[in-house]
Image (cartoon, rainbow, N blue to C red; front, side, top):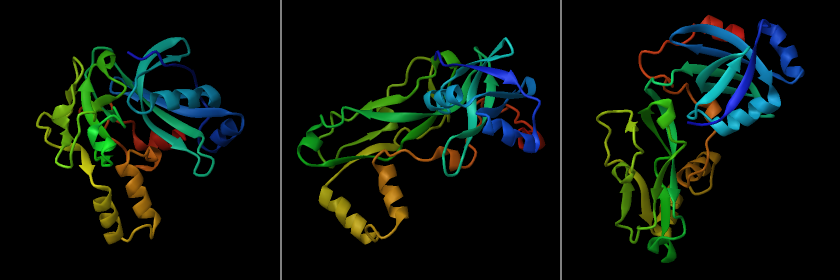
Length: 245
């Protein structure tokens, strides 16, 4: 279980008045879950930003709301489009003994140690995140997969090569464990593929290359992810969410 904590105060300010809160260094937020009504909350931008960076959208956060403790996962983070600071956070309350579904990153370890890399080949990551389910105490911050054993372009790593921690399963019972996580390529083959796709002609290609090489993606601009609480959990009503911002 993570030890990430955040103290929240209940919030009465809504609508356009929330702008003043942000100007004063306060981040508005909401806490909701299947068994509770949405709670409007707020916290200082410094501590909130640290928690958002440390927890991401897969690590449980221990919240204290006016002295009452709750466990939650960050559902969504709204950031300023230019300055990128946190403007609003939605927390999904969960229970200690509840099995939840969330997405965690896959980290390749042993980079630079494989015979393939030493021979001048390139190892590219094809899948960077995967959905798992587990109780909050069993949730890993990431799944690790060693590439140290890769040797030739015929080698690859799949989901079946990932050793899941105790109490953790892939979210989909029929998950295709043959799904490739990492491949080995000849540098010349990658260059040829890049040339065929138009090389460095546009940013879209560059973004694709970054993603292939494990680069981070701006998650806060993506469509809403799978519910942290799994199927059956209720979302807050849209009108409530809009008002909380």
